[in-house]
Image (tube, rainbow, N blue to C red):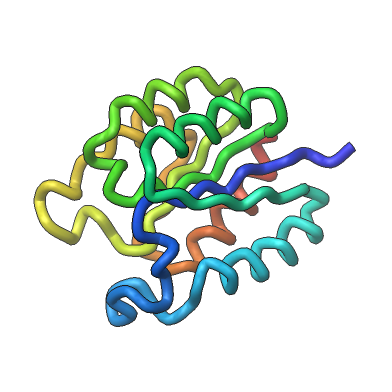
Amino acid sequence: MTQKILVLNGPNLNLLGKREPAKYGSETLADVQATLNGIAAELGLTLQMDQSNSEGTLIDMIHAARATCAGIVINPGAYSHTSIAILDALNAFDGAVIEVHITNIHAREEFRHHSFVSARANAVIAGCGTQGYGFALRHIATLV
């Protein structure tokens, strides 16, 4: 049986490819998912990819992953910097967690320099564009 990995995207990532393409690139979440599906097949992983603009929905998805997934790749978007609730949900998840940010949050506005999610993450990938998702999937495969 293959290991299932949840790739979870937070607020505004549904606009990827349309919102500030100079900063976030022109790839859409569908493009990212197509790339990740190929990497997952290569690694023998099953992929589930979700996105929500709602903090509560993201928490519910993390809770559901406790019973079905070996790992979570998460781009919490702006919730990185504000959500202790998402951190608490991730702390209740026993599998590996990789945090991804398309931009380098440490080179941006001061309020983006701290991520609550990083306290739970096994690794953090930031500033690699959408390629960071692939890096995260390859790394999580070594952890699960």
